Image (cartoon, rainbow, N blue to C red):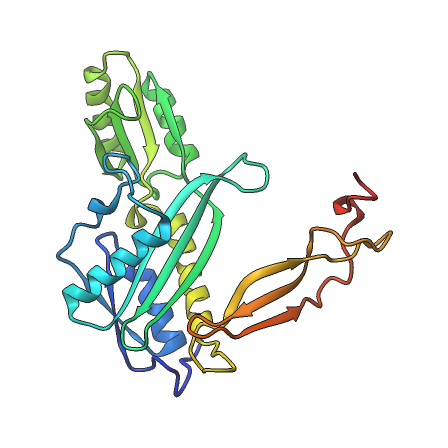
Length: 285
């Protein structure tokens, strides 16, 4: 990938507030695609905005948390440009059967009054279990890609405040498990994957894809006002059924919109001329 010459943000520096190593996957994307430097910012505990291990619940939405991080990083660095990311985990949106990760990156430009958001999602290395012996703990760890992906251990239930995070070796896991089992009043130990960015390579990859999505959006100027971030804001259903021709809920077109002005553009999709009859309310009610 080559940096876009003459791009809106080329040569500028963006603050990135993180304490979990996100700069390792975000900074190269912005350097290569935009010619933009990402400056790592510290001095603020981002866990105060919420933890995946639930000691501190996240206040507000995923976007609000990312926006807060971006502006906090900008203030600490004294920069008018900031990037921040926020992740969310849950079941996959189709069948609800596998763990899923949604990552959101926000770009805040105080000089031009712009906010652009990039997203990516995919299957996650994210799981919890209650186990009562070392053999079960070892099986869980191997299933969820330990030690490449770190683990969290605590006695009793998944909300027990006696927590140990960032476990990354077999000897460390065995010692933490033995201590938690000894402390447990139920004879069970709670295990879970550590999904902080530096502890979870699967999540790192989704963050990288979200950074690429954000950079691509920033490379798309509005035809009307030339602000970056002209991208898809809505999907239009109505793709005709391939059997009867009736409109379906499948996407027929995309609406592209500007983050600064009111310009909108409807772009018909050309890849699929018709929808599968399985998605038709008439052919498959």
